[in-house]
Image 1 (cartoon, rainbow, N blue to C red):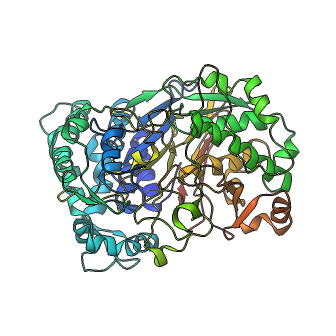
Image 2 (image 1 turned 180 degrees about the vertical axis):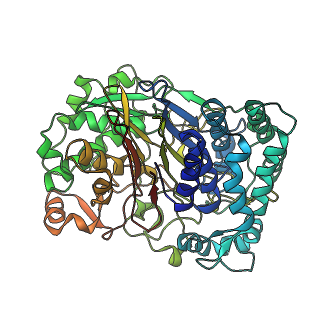
Image 3 (image 1 turned 60 degrees about the horizontal axis):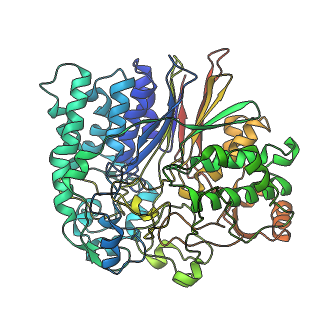
Length: 588
């Protein structure tokens, strides 16, 4: 079974499974397709996070870490010397070392079965011969067309080859990226065996044409989201020094299930904290479709997000303490019958709490939106105008889940390096990412900018196990909303008994009552965004409790997908998001 945010990625992954490949071959093939078909949402210059389990060790989930660090030249002193108070949201100064490609190659090397050429053939074919332009791709390019034309001519040349945004449904080609992938294959021509070929491709990516062109191009000053023209700081040595790899996930038990997430360099533990807070409530209290359930979810999310923003990023963060019964109980006591509009992180023993800047959107932009090419949330905040009115575009993310007949299972969230991140690098067909915008220019902050240090990422796929066996892999794009949208889905499945597709289809919600992880890092105290399908009674009840509600329409929040496996029968299933008519699930 395969499920993803784009039908062509699902199709590629499923084709691999049908031809005998395993889940890791399939997920890698689908991920490279996502670079081509959702370039406004991710790219080779970005990053990824995955959580997976191999059939031979079903009780030992692992994190696939594809988040690159800050370049060696990315110091707070350098950025503040440029007059910056925050890391820009677009432009090469915001670029962490690209980690996605290396991570997928490491996964394929260690857990896949196919040769690299077989895996990449789907992406190469689409890049060379064309993939249909999504309406959202056309809209994203249109919203930054002036930026491209006036300041980023290399992006205009690739994404507006006829001098205007491509029409929805037309074919979009990227021969330069196809050539990059063919170059990775050519590097392993003389190597013996699939492992040696993949290692040759990794070396080429980190020391060859890609690293050289990217580093050289970044030295040219170009427009950033702060309105200034700056050069980047990334070098070839930064590319060479990075190696993707594996880490042990953080886990909690909830209603007889083990939930596995990234550790504290990501936001994954936030979901674990929320589940621990909510586990003391009765099942009837945890229905997201009720006023009480929605209220409890929003209030628990605020508490966990406050901990994320105040504490996550410390190399030695004590997750055992954050997830302990005593700490969680104390946090739970803060939930009242009315909505909180305060930012309330907990205190950690032996560590001072450094609060992030707490600026409301209106204080920063007057409600008129922010600079072009920035951000990641899929929903504009209250008061922000449309992209057509402001030139603002917000990036997003992709997601893919795969499970195979043997029980291998993976959930992965590729992101960053979307076409509006920074200027397209000539000869490569893609741009650098902007993950460093999630860091602070404050030496005291656990999420500070520091050379060689990973930024705290929002990428947060999930794996669910029961009795030591993996049963669900799920995730969604959405920046700060990723774990927020996964939470109602998990509650509906693990507590409410919904099927995966029912849980994805059900109306959802999230809070904006925490500083955004993306430039310009603002928040809306007490804010909650809801789908109208929650119903007038529930929404009015939330408003009476003091939640500052933004109605987002009937089908607008979340791009969830998942795959499942029943260990007792081996039966597989998959589900995908209907919103936007783009996600797709397939299998047999």
